[in-house]
Length: 198
Image (cartoon, rainbow, N blue to C red; front, side, top):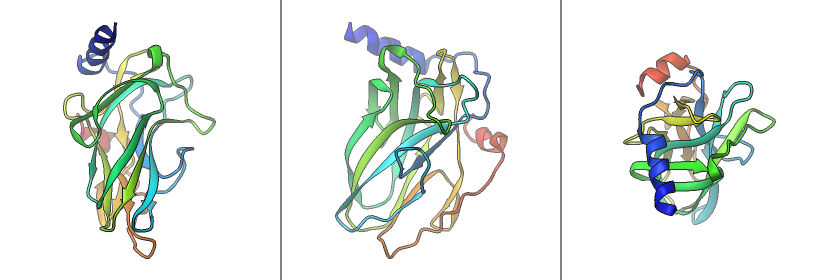
């Protein structure tokens, strides 16, 4: 049974399907479990912190049963835990190519919270002193794929932010409490961002 579930999960995320009807699904990483938070984390050296992978803009009645992504970490530290908040099967490691794929429990959809956000995963890190970033990117095999509430494959785009003075990054900056990451949100059209991942 477990092999069957793994095979179904791989097929669901790996086989090209008709694109979903929502071109605006967005993915981002923040420091708050509600999905509304900051893209700058300032832990003490040897301190721990959590980050959350979020999706929004599903539209009315929208939700997800799975997604795929890859994180790139440049700050000094290590991951202590990773939790699939969709509640189901996981494949891979988010920091090792090709990345991490996850499904909800029994392929039941997870719907957005009151703010319209699906918080899909959380990770706890320990920071050991050198500032850097945790950047969200597409999975090495499946791309920036998200399965909507009906299991139809769609592609997420990212909220673009400025990290360490450079635009075009999609994650969080990690720096000590007296550090600075210059991380205001940079607005861009969904079409221009999605074009980077197609």
